Length: 324
Image (cartoon, rainbow, N blue to C red; front, side):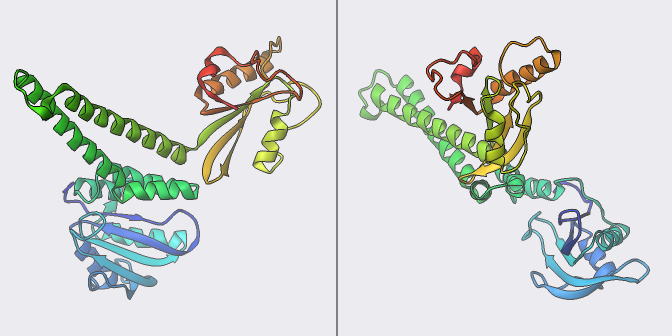
């Protein structure tokens, strides 16, 4: 257990909605339920109750659901009060919970308690935030797979492979003079190669998950007036960037989040790459270079008919990037 304190918080997003939820977790859940809804409802059963404050004044009516620990999200006794989603009424219900013995939960504390009470492992706990913040279908599915334990299961498998490989390596050293088939160099090497392959695949999976979570950073780059801002407007489907016939119109970087084929992408329109004596344009060009260093993908935009084999405008460090 984390401690003996009982916590409470509004569990639904800020703003006005049809439904709002106040969640309570901890040892004083039963006491708080007695004050607000005149006692705990049957466990795992939604019942209609009137929510009252310490003075007995009715604040709202809605559903109350009780989850008895350890069979709850946090592993503790949990009470959810599901009322109307107005900010005012939710604050009053939360205040009533605090007055009855709870304290305001810190951000993420319910999930923290779930982790400390062994209801979730660390990878699953991190996946909760990933699932909440997912902006595409692919990101949702990836986060849910991790939340359901797929990533943790894979890491445990690799851990087992490493332990077995270590046993074989140590045995091969200890019994190097013995003629034992399964301790031959090639057999041990095959096991180590298998572990290495598993680690490479896990890293690729983690990299893909990071791209789904944060989005691929796609930088539109090239010389001035080659169509970067026009492409930005087409991709974002709005007049995001100013388009003129004059070179150097874009002085600052402009960013928009889009989704392509289920993959979230951060598209960045940048100042054109060239030598400039204009101090403001030079600052914009420096920002372009900074974005190129961090880019996952660089879209190198050229004039029609230009030499596609030459990359004179691209800085040398961009050569190791994925350039299209």
